[in-house]
Length: 78
Image (cartoon, rainbow, N blue to C red; front, side, top):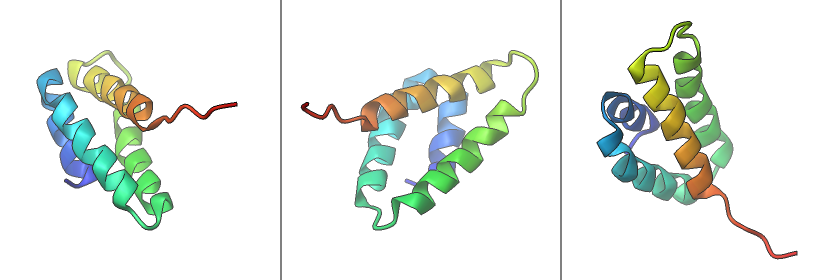
């Protein structure tokens, strides 16, 4: 799944978040250059931040991005 496709589905419904997150995590981990993935992810996310009022689609995108960040975070032992 492409990053843009995941964002498009995530802005329509919260019900699609788990599937889109799982696909993005798999894509993220499979990337040889994760910098390109992060650049594309941030480009898509920045579009949602340009919305100046509380719109449901923008709020779903912010929630989606938070869930994705939590899904990719790995706890490292001290």
